[in-house]
Length: 443
Image (cartoon, rainbow, N blue to C red; front, side, top):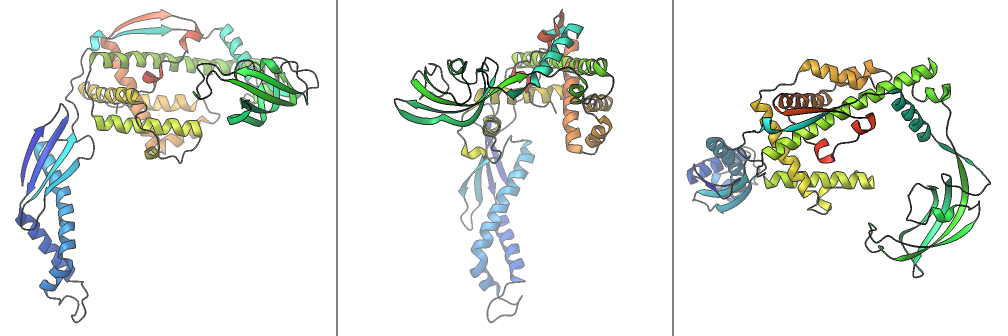
């Protein structure tokens, strides 16, 4: 077998492979001999059919099977011989497969970039310091109360904050349009769910009232065909609900699994959850800064095949979450979305994996145990959650990857320039940028 490799770009390789005709014919002969043992031909007993007839009847199919197998096996041999690892399945172009001649094909593929992660000392990181104060707990209790708001039917006129049940029909120049109508729609006045003027126009309405709202879609409306257009909505108010915010009482505490200890026990539980969220948020911000620093200090060209695959995955995930249809297939969706994000995620994944190797990191099983227990503490029966993780190897491996990522961040922080800043709780828990927060695994 002859192999030659051409470098066509930084990451693309063009591998030419030639398999001797003798090897092909030998494999075809073996395949036909196997076929002859079981072939059934009228006038001959099984296993006694002349090879000439076997070759005449099955030779072409046997040769095609052998060629297919040889392309796969010789490609693997060639890759091992050349010490190459494609990032995705190579594209195969058959250049010669005539009977009696050598099999010749070309495999085109991308390889992983050569990378030595550097610049750890140049990374600048700000570590936030924050505490959960009593005032923060008070504010969170109010948030929880408002989230549990429910509505009681009322005969009075609608006010800001009330929930209405409405039917509406929207028309543009007298014609209805897609998405412009709804029945039994629940709408909280002041929520900003509808375009400007819609909710304000329903304040003062009563049950069974009918109103016509002449409005205009914003110039930057997400549906471009409606942006800036005048629209008329005919609205029927079917129900008006006044908001009721629950009191901090035993019934309210029980919703959160606190059945004893009253307000003090409930505050303790809320504080623990807030402290857990605070630790998680500070970690996420540190990780985001470390990852951004690694990307900045290690620019690299990434394989197009990996970027395309990641972009397809991100597109599928976005459409499934937006539509609720998890039967969607990526091939049926528009391509080209999330290209920049996919490029960033692939680059970061390559950098993280190389950094782990350079720093010779392995998942710390004690940290894994601590992480499992911390996650389980958020549930009412933490022991069962811990058992579940340790009985599900796939889930446990995901946590091992998270632990390895934490270890990598810690290792980089030991080399980076780290400053500290004390901030209020609310600032500390603001979410980091999605691109950093959703970084790929280091493992």
